[in-house]
Picture 1 (tube, rainbow, N blue to C red):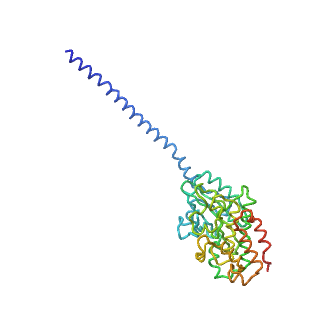
Picture 2: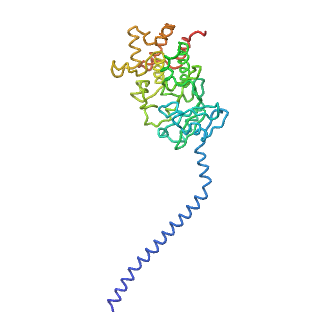
Picture 3: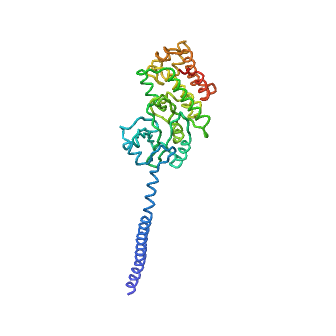
Length: 362
């Protein structure tokens, strides 16, 4: 009997933990069910606010009234949902699309590569709103923008003349005289001088090149993509890493140290000016026989040293003259591209010098 009582006592002790485990498990199940019920009612309560948040994500911030409403939906629809057939240009920040909002009202929409802007949407909003206040007759007008975690685009005024890169490629098919080329050069010099000296805070472009210079039908020139480089994450060395041709415009000190200054923009402008007056590209294939590192700057300097400065110009441009002003313009372009930063002129000085070289009005 003693042994039987002992065995019964042991079995009763085993039952106690089992009963406790059952109680704990039941409590846990009840807690989970309760949490699910609370989450269900909480979600239903906030459904209206969720819809508000979606509409806020599609908000368009407008800086300039163009006479028609701009909404996320009509912008996307006007681009054909960013269809390739409406694409009018590609750059380091993304593709640009022509968008006719209403008959006769056309804008350019630059769809940005969201992943390249690493500082977040709130900071992006702050920076773009600053750029929205930057206005000059030779800067493309930033009409408005949209920015969310999944979509970013900028809305600019549309310029029907295309970009300077296309203009240079096609100039052999049209009569382009010194007056037009000088006007383009002076317009962009004035735009850069404004960004460097009159903006608060000042804006460094960092990516001055022909594809970022747009024209209207009267050959007035406008600088685009100003201020966008500062929006990139710190992992980027400059605005268009990996984009064909860009490296021909980057100042040597910028390429080596990644430290940008207004004089880096001056260098890039000098390269553009050399392209504008010559038949060469910044990294022209014809330079390959001279070895690596030989570019339009090396080429122009070589010809000047050899007393053959006239060979820098397109034959049609040189033949029409005026020779003295053309050579002065060549010297100015070379001065913009010297290695010594202290020797390079400021963009304000460049604009002043070009003004002195202005052809007489006919």
